[in-house]
Picture 1 (cartoon, rainbow, N blue to C red):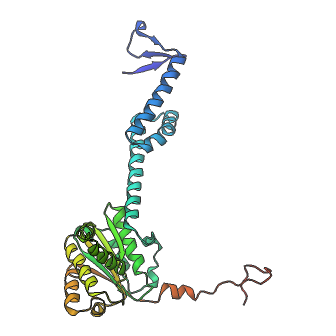
Picture 2: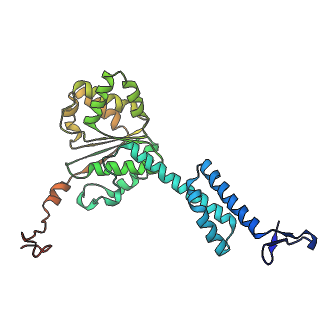
Picture 3: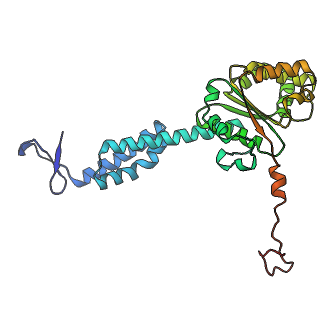
Amino acid sequence: MAYAKLSGALLVRKDAPIAETVSVPRAVQAATVRQGDGLLARHLKSLKLPTFLAQYERLAQQYAAEGLDPSGYLLRLAELELIERERRLIERRVKHARFPAVKGLDTFDFSAVPSLDKNVVLELARCEYVARQENVVAIGDFGTGKTHIAVALGMAACQKGMSVGFVTATALMNELLEAREEQRLLRLQRRLAGYRVLIIDDLAHVPLSTAGAELLFDVVSQRYERGSTIITSDLPFEEWNNVFGTARLTGAVLDRLTHHVHILHMQGESYRVRHGRTPQPQRRANGAGAGKRVE
């Protein structure tokens, strides 16, 4: 129903005769607005719409001043609410993943690892391999950024709404052994099997105990064709016997892990060694010439 505003606070329905003109005192109008704002704020809190609550007054003033469509005002508020909810969900998934650090592909120096195919990594970041329950194994020299790549792929999965877990191979073995001792192994195995993406970092030169190796095999086996597993290691596959202890167990792990797998070869010089050789500016003992390099 359309209304026209005359002088003061006089509201007139456009198609109404003069007799239907209604006069609303300004004081009543202001009190009604204040009461409505208070009720609206309480309703938004009850509905758990914090972004609506934080933004509605500012956007209302903006849309009123610019004479914009009221439906656009509501649409923008809904968009802001959805954006903020998604941000909080991603933040929660990243926290639950327990990454050692938050890193993305935008900070990875691909030029330092020429053996790594950047296009393959960018394709993996789309997370379509997760939908196909495929695995990723990053193998290469120490310090070439295998953990960085694994975390970045985990971050990409978090941003797409997937559950992710991160753990080192040694920590996982210890956690599994402790859970078995405390008779909560099945609960832990169910949690590990439930991740859409499980990252097992640093499957290194230190041999696992016989029991630990068998429990780690159980994790890989239970996730086979049910979820994606990312493993990083300094060792090529032919040396994984050094970790699992026997050719039989190593073969069983590799059989399940490499049936559907993307292998990232990462050979190169250690990032830490490379940057450790960067000359640092020296300073004079008395502070003179501070910031100037001494040749």
